[in-house]
Image (tube, rainbow, N blue to C red):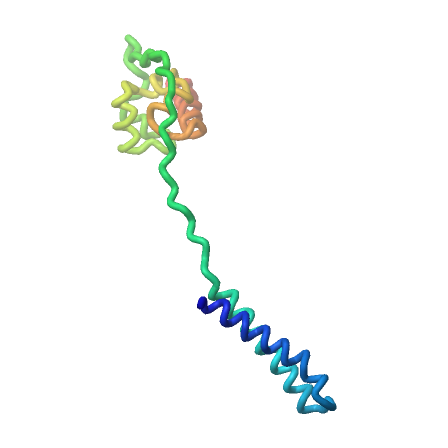
Length: 151
């Protein structure tokens, strides 16, 4: 027998006794106090029964199946301009959010300078780096501002 059912039964017995007491004779202060105690015990047993009920165990979720995507068109990588870039590659770290780790990631994508970053598409850069589109858009906007200042 489950423990929660036992508590529920005890609570019902307490409430049944409270209902039976008025039929046994006169009600005085002692029987009124006894009825109040039985009501409190009945509520307590019901609460214990509720807290010890068996919980539903969530099913183990299978990982979602990979979504098949069509191969996207190859986007040409930005090429470094023939002229010397206005700021060297280390200057990419002046952009908020680009540190040594992101700098290495951008260099792997052939983004060597602020100008290269300014020419990128936020959507393509987000897809290639795994960074949010919002963040890459901020980087590109800041790179455009810095390249204007350097020019």
